[in-house]
Length: 438
Image (spheres, one colour):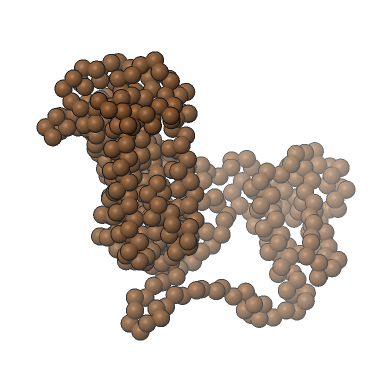
């Protein structure tokens, strides 16, 4: 155990003290925040291309509905289209918008004509179509003598409010399922990134030591199994340290950026979209309800279970990556070919996790959350939903048992492959190495 601790300590300190680790740990939150700032600036940016458009409202439909906005100005004309087109070069107009008369009030199609030297840009296209559509709707309401209150009453918003079947049971809101699904998918993706990234890091570390022949010196005093186990634990501790630092720095930096630049949820959305028309009081109520639902999630149960699933999944997949790294040299082509069987279950688990977040009690979700190769990613996506306790217990026991088995299996491959050079590894050789006697 003393030698195992020395290996873990060496693996951890040799990585966290590297300049590359320090730089990556600091630059990653900075890059994330810079991306957030740039995206916020892009979505809040408005075109500085000034356009003046002549409007021919032949059917008197618009009635001033085309209001001027930043860099986009409308001027209603009384001259006919041919006159404007013939004298277009002598005017300050950039385009002519012709709105013809409405021949059929019951028609669902209506075409307006935009005359210019080039195609209208997307922002101009959206602005014109939306305003003409709203104006035409008002025109039809008046022309058909429709009662506005009755018409508005037709458009009904439906809300599904969940209620417990038992009296006094735990109540839920309309956001409960959405919050649970979002939290589940977030945890599933975190598991995927952690297992895959740090498992690959273990493989590269083993490959480097084998290529540099450092392992030949180490194996003289430490058993290969303890070398592999120490490397897995050490790299996992490095990963947890990095994630912990990011979990502190990223929210802190985002808070500072929001305070300095004033970015909020609305600045990250394109101008003119429906989000700008939402009632602020309703928005605040929805945010308050969402925060309440997040607080109602049983994090004291979910977080410890997520740690167990992370450890089980990390040991399971990292041991396989370590076995592959020990069986090959510096040939990355062979490494990629051998890691495909490991990568496939992880990728499949991601797709299953997305489905499980929407239907957490489906047969596929239940099976995948118990199956050890999928459960580290799928089960965290279900934990935010109420699921039977026996499924969690069975899933954890199977995952821990499978992780121990794969660590043992990979250790058998590691002890032989780490000292072999010049041989092309195959799955047939892996099977022989497992039963090889010292």
